[in-house]
Length: 253
Image 1 (cartoon, rainbow, N blue to C red):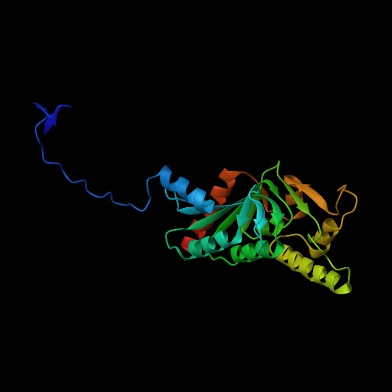
Image 2: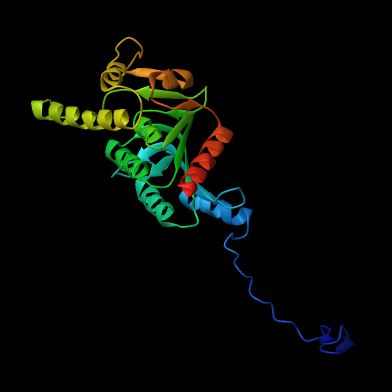
Protein backbone atom coordinates (compact mmCIF):
# COMPACT_ATOMS: atom_id res chain seq x y z
CA UNK A 1 0.00 0.00 0.00
CA UNK A 2 1.17 3.62 -0.61
CA UNK A 3 1.09 6.16 2.21
CA UNK A 4 0.62 9.96 1.77
CA UNK A 5 1.81 12.73 4.04
CA UNK A 6 -0.20 15.79 5.12
CA UNK A 7 0.84 17.79 1.97
CA UNK A 8 -0.49 15.22 -0.44
CA UNK A 9 3.02 14.08 -1.39
CA UNK A 10 3.63 10.45 -1.96
CA UNK A 11 5.62 8.85 0.83
CA UNK A 12 7.66 5.76 0.65
CA UNK A 13 5.89 2.49 0.12
CA UNK A 14 5.11 0.65 3.28
CA UNK A 15 4.42 -3.04 3.34
CA UNK A 16 3.56 -4.52 -0.05
CA UNK A 17 -0.02 -5.40 -0.82
CA UNK A 18 -0.85 -8.93 0.19
CA UNK A 19 -4.10 -10.69 -0.52
CA UNK A 20 -6.21 -10.91 2.58
CA UNK A 21 -7.43 -14.32 3.52
CA UNK A 22 -11.13 -14.44 4.22
CA UNK A 23 -11.93 -15.54 7.72
CA UNK A 24 -13.97 -18.66 7.92
CA UNK A 25 -17.03 -18.46 10.12
CA UNK A 26 -16.54 -20.06 13.50
CA UNK A 27 -18.34 -23.32 13.87
CA UNK A 28 -20.60 -23.84 16.84
CA UNK A 29 -19.79 -27.13 18.52
CA UNK A 30 -22.92 -26.94 20.63
CA UNK A 31 -21.00 -25.70 23.66
CA UNK A 32 -20.85 -22.02 22.70
CA UNK A 33 -17.77 -20.08 23.69
CA UNK A 34 -17.26 -21.95 26.94
CA UNK A 35 -17.47 -19.59 29.87
CA UNK A 36 -18.97 -16.73 27.81
CA UNK A 37 -21.88 -18.88 26.69
CA UNK A 38 -22.53 -20.12 30.22
CA UNK A 39 -22.38 -16.57 31.59
CA UNK A 40 -24.92 -15.40 29.00
CA UNK A 41 -27.21 -18.30 29.87
CA UNK A 42 -27.02 -17.57 33.60
CA UNK A 43 -27.70 -13.83 33.12
CA UNK A 44 -30.64 -14.36 30.75
CA UNK A 45 -32.36 -17.36 32.33
CA UNK A 46 -30.96 -17.94 35.82
CA UNK A 47 -29.87 -21.41 34.76
CA UNK A 48 -27.00 -23.13 33.01
CA UNK A 49 -26.47 -26.37 31.11
CA UNK A 50 -23.16 -28.06 31.85
CA UNK A 51 -21.75 -30.38 29.17
CA UNK A 52 -18.22 -31.13 30.37
CA UNK A 53 -19.05 -33.51 33.20
CA UNK A 54 -19.88 -37.20 33.21
CA UNK A 55 -23.45 -36.40 32.21
CA UNK A 56 -25.15 -33.36 30.67
CA UNK A 57 -27.23 -31.66 33.36
CA UNK A 58 -29.14 -28.39 33.69
CA UNK A 59 -28.93 -26.25 36.84
CA UNK A 60 -31.89 -24.01 37.68
CA UNK A 61 -31.80 -21.41 40.46
CA UNK A 62 -34.85 -20.25 42.41
CA UNK A 63 -33.74 -17.19 44.35
CA UNK A 64 -35.16 -14.14 46.09
CA UNK A 65 -38.91 -13.85 45.86
CA UNK A 66 -41.08 -15.95 43.55
CA UNK A 67 -42.90 -13.37 41.46
CA UNK A 68 -46.58 -13.87 40.71
CA UNK A 69 -49.00 -12.01 38.46
CA UNK A 70 -47.75 -8.59 39.59
CA UNK A 71 -44.26 -7.23 38.89
CA UNK A 72 -42.26 -6.63 42.06
CA UNK A 73 -40.14 -3.49 42.60
CA UNK A 74 -36.87 -3.33 40.70
CA UNK A 75 -34.72 -3.58 43.85
CA UNK A 76 -36.16 -7.03 44.69
CA UNK A 77 -34.34 -10.16 43.57
CA UNK A 78 -37.01 -12.32 41.96
CA UNK A 79 -37.66 -15.59 40.20
CA UNK A 80 -40.17 -15.10 37.41
CA UNK A 81 -42.42 -18.05 36.63
CA UNK A 82 -42.70 -17.00 32.97
CA UNK A 83 -38.93 -17.62 32.71
CA UNK A 84 -38.83 -20.85 34.72
CA UNK A 85 -41.77 -22.69 33.16
CA UNK A 86 -40.43 -22.64 29.56
CA UNK A 87 -37.01 -23.73 30.87
CA UNK A 88 -38.53 -26.78 32.54
CA UNK A 89 -40.44 -27.75 29.41
CA UNK A 90 -37.26 -27.33 27.33
CA UNK A 91 -35.23 -29.47 29.77
CA UNK A 92 -37.86 -32.22 29.69
CA UNK A 93 -37.90 -32.22 25.87
CA UNK A 94 -34.16 -31.84 25.20
CA UNK A 95 -32.68 -35.30 24.47
CA UNK A 96 -29.16 -34.13 25.36
CA UNK A 97 -30.02 -33.01 28.92
CA UNK A 98 -30.06 -36.03 31.23
CA UNK A 99 -30.97 -34.51 34.60
CA UNK A 100 -31.92 -31.34 36.49
CA UNK A 101 -30.50 -29.70 39.62
CA UNK A 102 -32.64 -27.08 41.41
CA UNK A 103 -30.78 -24.70 43.75
CA UNK A 104 -33.02 -22.80 46.19
CA UNK A 105 -32.33 -19.70 48.25
CA UNK A 106 -35.73 -18.07 48.44
CA UNK A 107 -37.86 -16.17 50.94
CA UNK A 108 -41.02 -17.50 49.29
CA UNK A 109 -43.48 -15.47 47.28
CA UNK A 110 -46.64 -15.97 45.25
CA UNK A 111 -48.42 -19.19 46.22
CA UNK A 112 -49.96 -20.03 42.85
CA UNK A 113 -46.79 -19.24 40.88
CA UNK A 114 -44.70 -21.31 43.30
CA UNK A 115 -47.12 -24.24 43.19
CA UNK A 116 -47.21 -24.09 39.38
CA UNK A 117 -43.41 -24.46 39.23
CA UNK A 118 -43.46 -27.18 41.90
CA UNK A 119 -46.10 -29.19 40.04
CA UNK A 120 -44.06 -29.01 36.84
CA UNK A 121 -40.95 -30.20 38.67
CA UNK A 122 -42.72 -33.10 40.36
CA UNK A 123 -44.20 -34.22 37.04
CA UNK A 124 -40.91 -34.44 35.14
CA UNK A 125 -39.70 -37.85 33.92
CA UNK A 126 -36.05 -36.85 33.97
CA UNK A 127 -34.10 -37.20 37.24
CA UNK A 128 -34.38 -34.13 39.47
CA UNK A 129 -32.51 -33.21 42.66
CA UNK A 130 -33.00 -30.08 44.80
CA UNK A 131 -30.62 -28.35 47.19
CA UNK A 132 -31.67 -25.75 49.77
CA UNK A 133 -28.96 -23.15 50.46
CA UNK A 134 -29.50 -20.24 52.81
CA UNK A 135 -33.27 -20.53 52.96
CA UNK A 136 -36.23 -22.34 51.46
CA UNK A 137 -39.01 -20.44 53.18
CA UNK A 138 -42.78 -20.33 52.71
CA UNK A 139 -43.61 -21.47 49.15
CA UNK A 140 -39.98 -22.56 48.91
CA UNK A 141 -40.96 -25.61 51.01
CA UNK A 142 -43.07 -27.29 48.28
CA UNK A 143 -40.48 -26.23 45.68
CA UNK A 144 -37.77 -28.04 47.65
CA UNK A 145 -39.96 -31.13 48.06
CA UNK A 146 -40.90 -31.29 44.37
CA UNK A 147 -37.68 -32.94 43.19
CA UNK A 148 -37.26 -36.69 43.14
CA UNK A 149 -34.57 -36.35 45.83
CA UNK A 150 -33.99 -33.33 48.07
CA UNK A 151 -30.95 -32.08 50.00
CA UNK A 152 -30.35 -29.25 52.44
CA UNK A 153 -27.11 -27.86 53.85
CA UNK A 154 -26.87 -27.86 57.68
CA UNK A 155 -26.88 -24.03 57.94
CA UNK A 156 -30.00 -23.53 55.78
CA UNK A 157 -33.44 -22.88 57.26
CA UNK A 158 -37.04 -23.45 56.16
CA UNK A 159 -40.00 -21.45 57.51
CA UNK A 160 -43.42 -23.10 57.57
CA UNK A 161 -46.35 -20.77 58.16
CA UNK A 162 -50.01 -20.30 57.16
CA UNK A 163 -51.01 -18.61 53.91
CA UNK A 164 -50.82 -14.80 54.01
CA UNK A 165 -52.28 -12.14 51.76
CA UNK A 166 -51.16 -8.55 51.23
CA UNK A 167 -53.46 -5.62 50.57
CA UNK A 168 -57.18 -5.23 51.23
CA UNK A 169 -58.85 -8.34 52.68
CA UNK A 170 -62.57 -8.64 53.33
CA UNK A 171 -63.27 -10.05 56.80
CA UNK A 172 -66.03 -12.41 55.70
CA UNK A 173 -66.44 -16.21 55.90
CA UNK A 174 -65.78 -16.62 52.18
CA UNK A 175 -62.28 -15.13 52.59
CA UNK A 176 -61.42 -17.57 55.36
CA UNK A 177 -62.75 -20.43 53.25
CA UNK A 178 -60.52 -19.32 50.36
CA UNK A 179 -57.50 -19.25 52.68
CA UNK A 180 -58.30 -22.74 53.97
CA UNK A 181 -58.59 -24.17 50.47
CA UNK A 182 -55.32 -22.59 49.34
CA UNK A 183 -53.58 -23.83 52.47
CA UNK A 184 -54.86 -27.35 51.86
CA UNK A 185 -53.36 -27.29 48.38
CA UNK A 186 -49.96 -26.63 49.92
CA UNK A 187 -50.39 -29.25 52.65
CA UNK A 188 -51.48 -31.89 50.14
CA UNK A 189 -48.59 -31.19 47.77
CA UNK A 190 -45.91 -31.16 50.48
CA UNK A 191 -47.13 -34.31 52.21
CA UNK A 192 -47.49 -36.15 48.89
CA UNK A 193 -43.94 -35.29 47.85
CA UNK A 194 -42.18 -35.75 51.21
CA UNK A 195 -42.27 -38.05 54.23
CA UNK A 196 -43.99 -35.67 56.66
CA UNK A 197 -47.59 -36.39 57.67
CA UNK A 198 -50.40 -33.85 57.06
CA UNK A 199 -51.10 -33.65 60.81
CA UNK A 200 -47.48 -32.87 61.68
CA UNK A 201 -47.15 -30.34 58.86
CA UNK A 202 -50.26 -28.48 60.05
CA UNK A 203 -48.93 -28.55 63.60
CA UNK A 204 -45.66 -26.91 62.50
CA UNK A 205 -47.61 -24.42 60.38
CA UNK A 206 -49.84 -23.28 63.25
CA UNK A 207 -47.17 -23.21 65.97
CA UNK A 208 -47.69 -20.08 68.13
CA UNK A 209 -44.70 -20.44 70.44
CA UNK A 210 -41.70 -19.91 68.15
CA UNK A 211 -42.04 -16.82 65.93
CA UNK A 212 -42.44 -13.41 67.58
CA UNK A 213 -44.39 -11.64 64.81
CA UNK A 214 -45.98 -14.62 63.09
CA UNK A 215 -47.39 -18.12 63.44
CA UNK A 216 -45.27 -21.02 62.26
CA UNK A 217 -41.97 -22.86 62.67
CA UNK A 218 -38.40 -22.36 61.48
CA UNK A 219 -36.47 -25.58 60.81
CA UNK A 220 -32.73 -25.79 60.29
CA UNK A 221 -31.16 -28.36 57.97
CA UNK A 222 -31.05 -31.27 60.40
CA UNK A 223 -34.55 -30.56 61.74
CA UNK A 224 -35.97 -30.45 58.19
CA UNK A 225 -34.50 -33.91 57.56
CA UNK A 226 -35.70 -35.25 60.93
CA UNK A 227 -39.25 -34.02 60.23
CA UNK A 228 -39.25 -35.75 56.83
CA UNK A 229 -39.55 -32.58 54.74
CA UNK A 230 -36.13 -33.11 53.13
CA UNK A 231 -34.47 -36.42 52.29
CA UNK A 232 -30.84 -35.78 53.29
CA UNK A 233 -28.26 -33.35 54.56
CA UNK A 234 -25.62 -32.60 51.93
CA UNK A 235 -23.91 -30.17 49.62
CA UNK A 236 -23.42 -29.74 45.92
CA UNK A 237 -21.13 -32.78 45.58
CA UNK A 238 -23.81 -34.99 47.16
CA UNK A 239 -26.42 -33.51 44.81
CA UNK A 240 -24.32 -34.26 41.72
CA UNK A 241 -23.54 -37.80 42.91
CA UNK A 242 -27.24 -38.51 43.57
CA UNK A 243 -28.25 -37.11 40.18
CA UNK A 244 -25.60 -39.15 38.34
CA UNK A 245 -26.78 -42.28 40.13
CA UNK A 246 -30.40 -41.62 39.09
CA UNK A 247 -29.38 -40.98 35.49
CA UNK A 248 -27.42 -44.23 35.32
CA UNK A 249 -30.25 -46.20 36.94
CA UNK A 250 -32.75 -44.76 34.45
CA UNK A 251 -30.41 -45.58 31.55
CA UNK A 252 -30.15 -49.22 32.67
CA UNK A 253 -33.92 -49.45 33.03
